[in-house]
Length: 203
Length: 100
Ligand SMILES: [Zn+2]
Image (cartoon, rainbow over all chains, first blue to last red):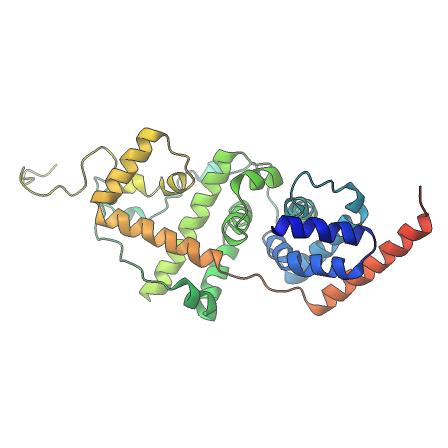
């Protein structure tokens, strides 16, 4: 449905309809900004990357043929722009590096397990109300900080998959990362966000 | 290891060779549907019998549902204005190029 609406808006924007373009910007701008933020260290740099993306979209508008969804196409342009920018601001690391150097990155602190690998004490049952939680500034800060602290490739994958809800196939297309590596990155990122939530809940 | 391990004591960990510490590393593969059939069955069997792992998997599900509900921030009004300016300029250039 969203894709159909996008296709129509793109068509109108191509014909010079400013209102259609404004709608596309409002519809996708916030997501682009958030993904850009995964690559660059400041809000200003992220806004620049988003700006460049839309300029790229305008220049390439004639070349969007609707083979992928508009959103996928946008993300692909953004990632290219943001990566270039991230490198320039010397934050980016090559994506292929899943972190073979830090292969020992357990999801849960080993001290939580016995020598046999059983829980020493059971993890508590959480009773988070996701709606209430989404409105909590405190929690938002905890999650934002946890994500900001991730290595770039983990941060990019969790942002696309879990924050933006992009499917793994699309992420594979956008990022040029194998399915296995994507899962490893996602696994490590999720484990760290869970841990941050745990510390917040326990406190 | 301990000579006190008595045969009638409830096992610290469910039957099967999957330890809790191993299971927590498989959660993403499980949720992604990437486990081979046999491992998937072992995983599910373990979780159905292990309170700790059931709680852990549930914690991760709740983590995902929190992440999925965080709305991105809007573009600043200045950024939006600049984009519309860029659009108008693109349009002028397109029109001055004329039909090819
Ligand atoms: Zn267990």
